[in-house]
Image (cartoon, rainbow, N blue to C red; front, top):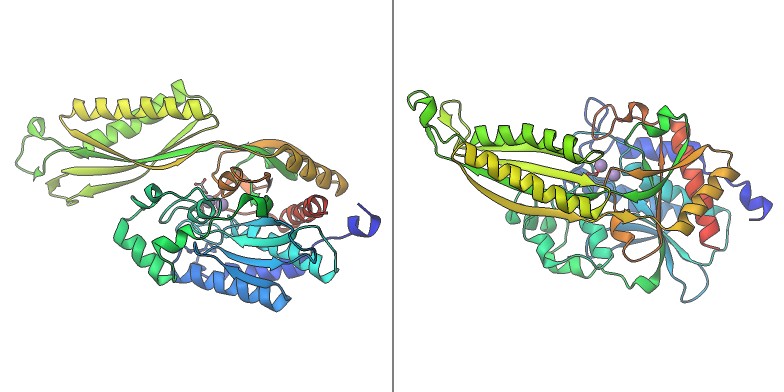
Length: 414
Ligand code: GLV
Ligand code: MN
Ligand code: MN
């Protein structure tokens, strides 16, 4: 890279102003954001993003899956596009860095390239993917863009089909428009994503940049324990078919099972819905939101079998029926070696301490890795908190990450 290019840096103040402005959209009193995919706050954030892009002189693009992009075209004809991005949606009432940092860093990279009139060999596109967090369908936008969206993904959206269709309509989308977002892999030169680490490794090792090696596989199930509703005062304890007992026993057993037999893997019961859900009625049904993750697809498969067997054993123990409904199924993804080297070289050039590490969080990069050279970097999360109102990353770390993204982009797009 020539000397004038290697001296380039993102504009920290401009980047921060964008970050703060965006964080005000859907802001909550505790400093978090509430921008579930396709909610009003999320759509406002997306409108702000494309307006900002247009003001910089970038082209705006919205595809059939609602993915919102800012595009900087290269002058050469027939060139592919290097995508940079993440997501502007959030989990409910939680951190302002998760996803937003990657989208705004991508926008800042395009801004720097444009204002310096740098000529590249690929188009650059800063993209905000739809519903990374799975308010409706996990990684909906990146699955659609990478041509992996199947009708099956739309069969069981979180919150049901009616809510899903209503949310799509609200955003000017439809189930059929989603499938039009698929891109020809030959037109995609690669995908780069900056994200907060959401773990403690970088902070503990006093390092500034994590270069992601692989991303965990994730499976989710709705597990329904089904018993019988009864009067909570009159039905003797020994005669009840209490769905809450099976669901609770399973929650405790799942933790023990994973800690004992699947070290390094994780399981989460994130929600329980009780029916009918009253103080004075023995619960007839408890629907458990179960998710588990592993860094290897075989292990994920074994975990699934072991956890469902455990659920069945707990149901039997309390005389309950069991129904299991598979939801997300995302395989592990390895990051591209060339992209990892570009990130390492950019970090070295910038004098930043870096390491390689796997990601325990899911990302749109998992979808993109199926169709193009894909890589991710992470920057330190104070205390390792994320999906939490405690989520925080020092601004200098955000800037460091954006500079690595900038220089890796320049290396890969020339
Ligand atoms: C996304 O944040 C996930 O890992 O669930
Ligand atoms: Mn997240
Ligand atoms: Mn994220």
